[in-house]
Image (tube, rainbow, N blue to C red; front, side, top):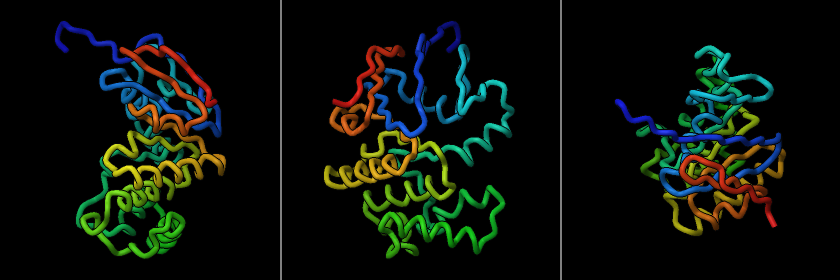
Length: 213
C-alpha cells in the first residue's frame, strides 16, 4: 500500500494430506482469508511455494489456474454468493456450464446434488424464498456438482442460527467421511473443533497446529 508493505502471511509452512479435514483458525487480520485464497488458487504467493497435487501453482498460467479452480476445488462462502432471481437448480448447474457440459447433463447432475443435500423440494425456489440454512445447502451443492477433490469453506456457519450451523457442520463431516479433503476457515473455536486438525494463525504466522483430541 504505497510505501507500506503488509505481510498477510509470513513463514507459513503447512502440509495438508488428501482426505484430511482441516480448520484454519484465527481472528480478523490473522491471515486466514489470505491463506484460503492461496489454497484455492485465487491468489498467488508473492514468495515461497504452493504445491497442489504435486504442481507448483506459480508455474501455471491464468487459464490453467482457472481450470484447477473449476475442476479440483469447490468453494463455499459465508455469504452463500448465490445468483439472485435464479432458481436453486440453475445456481447449482452454472459451474458445469463453464466446463462445456450440455444442458440436459447439467440439469441431471444439479438435481442429483440438490437431492443428495435434502433440497430436492426446493429446485425451483430462488434464494429469497429459502432460509439461510437452505441457501447454504444450495451453495454446498454448487461446490460439489463439479465433483472436486478439495472443498474450501470460508466461515460456512457465520451467517446461520446455531441449529442451521450445526446442520452444515454435520454435512461437512459427512463429506469428509466419504474421503473428500475439507479445509474450513473459521474464527470460532467451537466450529473448528469438528476438524481433525487445527492450524492456528496470529498476525500472519502459524502459532500452533493441533490434532483432534
